[in-house]
Image 1 (cartoon, each protein chain N blue to C red):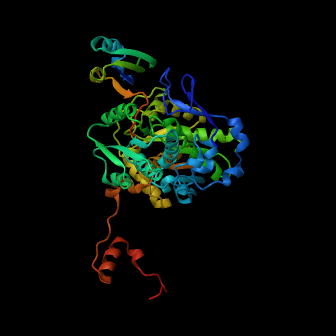
Image 2 (image 1 turned 180 degrees about the vertical axis):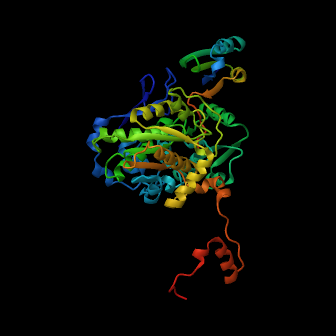
Image 3 (image 1 turned 120 degrees about the vertical axis):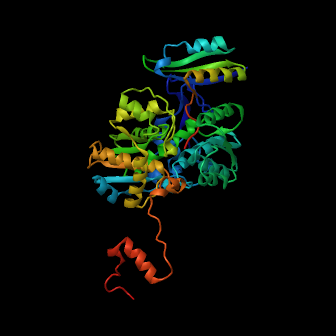
Length: 421
Length: 80
């Protein structure tokens, strides 16, 4: 059962019932779900969680919706991998990767949409909607299909074909908006008030955002019920980063882990880094920017949770930095080369950001570090395509093979001694 | 009559201008500030606008043309 008992304004603390609302009527501050932690603590234990399904729904008691009516496409409980080779390259002895590429629609968005879709159906909505440049759209379309709901997905008209297919295959209605990023944003804001749809990241945003807490829960459980020393998290709106922190804090409140000493470090692409710019300037005032980066999944110019992310960064003793688009590509390739994980651009941001933080001594070599890889690379192949070694073109003869292969690597071309003929 | 909740973000050079006052004076729009944070070099204001939808749209175009960034109160809606 859910122990959520109200929505509360993060700015003025006014409370509201658990309705599909997202801003405080008084000060227009954002609303957040609050829980009865005393009751939750009596109901939840490590053992009860471990007996649950291998998905986000093992933490159903810590979420704001009823698991019995879950819209479930098996999101979450993704692998936490000890990254020996990448760790060696970066000089980190205890580096782990939280691999959210393996979610059902290949990104962490399945966690938040699982909760949003479940709550939307609970509220009686028949339509799930979103505005997205890729990952969110795919997840909304898939969850709507599973729930038997209509999906309406707004996309920029110049979106790559791969991302369009990843939503339209679920029979979602795709609406390609001809206009600038700001035009799409404003249109969808106006539509939210006029149509009886659950816009997952707008009118059910307080519930949607709670899904990201499961990343914090999972990492702690997978480390043997302890918080990591350091988290490296990509920053877009800042919500994921803030909710991982909230998830870890809740585990302490519930007596499931002893303490949280985790430093939370955040990384952005330099072409869209309003949170890092504010951090570097020592201010909590976010100055909105026009995104110009290949890391489109992080390209939020006016981050809704930027202020709260800066609070967490300071409170946890973490830090932040921004990496160039060239570093994003290098990061994708470094991760693929060392750990066999093909991440999208946000993973490249994390990997290169971690490399820089480690080189600067801002991540200690003996810390237990978790880097969050939030989406798979097949959706953003164009980011790395031009940098990859092309295939060897040969005739179907041994001579042609040996000529081409030998030219690429003389040493590797020799057959192993004693090998079968 | 329509209502719209928006966030204005002012660059440094516009901080001292009475943009919200002018918006209410030049267009048939009632402005109602709910939250704000303004310093000497930057500032944002969250406010509600009341008026005919077309008038609000014209007013917001005028504000944006001045160089003030106009966003929905919840920040960016388009996500990755």
